[in-house]
Length: 265
Image (cartoon, rainbow, N blue to C red; front, side, top):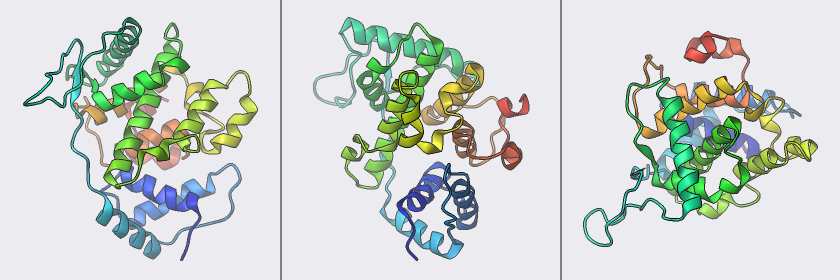
């Protein structure tokens, strides 16, 4: 049975966010997301076919090696052991950008983790610097969304590497870039946003209460950095956090896996 690109993408997306999930659970999640589209087509996936898709994905995917953390002011050796490490930038504007982001990350992570924040993965830093022109760091929402988008591109690149696919898939047609442009034109041409990335609406992350957004970004960063969350976290929490950000489920569907922020809603 052949599915639409949307359905195939959702199966892939569900697996990557919760690799321990069963085919049955992924089928249920995908069907919820298909039904929650702005213009649902009535398409549904079935467990048997999903199981086949998952078998192909698992066979192909190889988890990339962890990306080194980039501490402030690190100077990488030119040759020899650990010569693959990145260096802290020397350009004043880049230094300012990363220092502001590191400060924001440290602030929000300290609310949810007892572990100290040292830095971001160097691959995430690369993305943060590459897209820095879309954010005004005088505003906390911009700082948070800068971290959010840096994580979005970082996680997608790592997934593409694991699937042995070209990073050029993150081009102008990618969901990540379309979402970035929706953020960029949220005031000047908001009507385009629902055309580019309908799954983000009616509640895109930048329209959430800032404190809720900060908690979700902190949880995702903690997971990406391998830090400890202060509260016990059930399996699939990354999936739950992302779904909250995208507003894909009703609160009742998320009840079994509530995060601390949800409990206070």
